[in-house]
Amino acid sequence: LFLNFFDIAWYTTKYNNGNMNVPVVRLAELYLTRAQCKLQLGYGADEIRADYNLIRERAGIPADQHSSETSVLSYIIAYERNLELAYEGDRFHELKRTKSDFKTDVGTFKWNDTRLVYPIPQQEVDENPNMVQNAGY
Image (cartoon, rainbow, N blue to C red; front, side, top):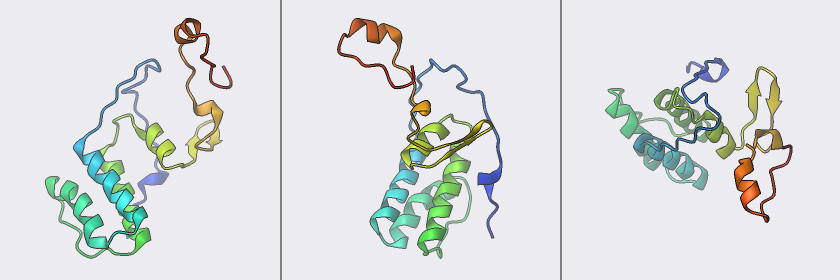
């Protein structure tokens, strides 16, 4: 049995400034992304588990030696990602990367909805005559 953290709505204001662009990539994120890629490419369960078990063991959690079904591995990787990267402000980019729907207080948006694309700063548009502003701005 797994606790479903996907239905819980917690928010952070760590990166509340919309003009702030702070790209941060942690090694744990790279391991989890690699595990997800291996799963999608059909690698063996042992290789997939090896990536996310590095994160679990570092955190003092016993390694998973038995999960092998694709749906279970996918769930575990997403679960580990939510625990490991909680409140780091990358949920938006993660949903875009995985082409997942955005569920918000004002509705649900598809991953490629133009309302989820930030405007190009006006100074950049003014400086470059070939620049075209993103749709909706």
